[in-house]
Length: 160
Image (cartoon, rainbow, N blue to C red; front, top):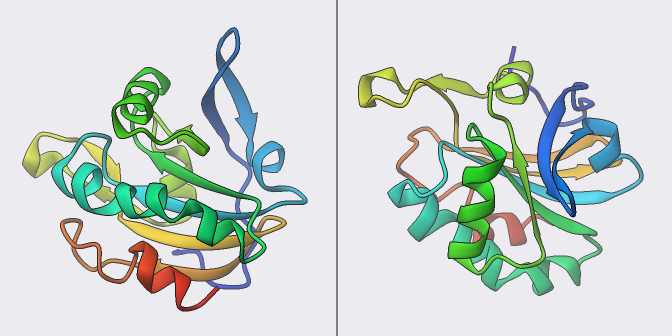
């Protein structure tokens, strides 16, 4: 079942880059007591993710935070090392990168997809959401993984 507005995020463990290397962080560690814009992408460095989706959130993160948002985060079904490289290549300082390497989060929220036809295996659908203290307040899910219209930064800014 796909997560809906008003639902609590499920408890899963992400991997993030810490000072000493990869660290495990639970959903509560990341979202509890915070208001976060979370974007989900099919994969780091994939064309739409790298050129069309993430850049808008990088460019407008201060505008997002000015609306009472504590952080902007991105999650992808990639390992923590790939996400670290993507963060650096994207100049995405200030954005939190949450590795969902086994698609546990994507599956738990019902926003996983099968990218096997493209040689990608399990992936996340493309979406953006506003999460307030672990509760989904806004959810924008794309019909096609190649599009960034519904889930893009401008669409999200209109509703937060």
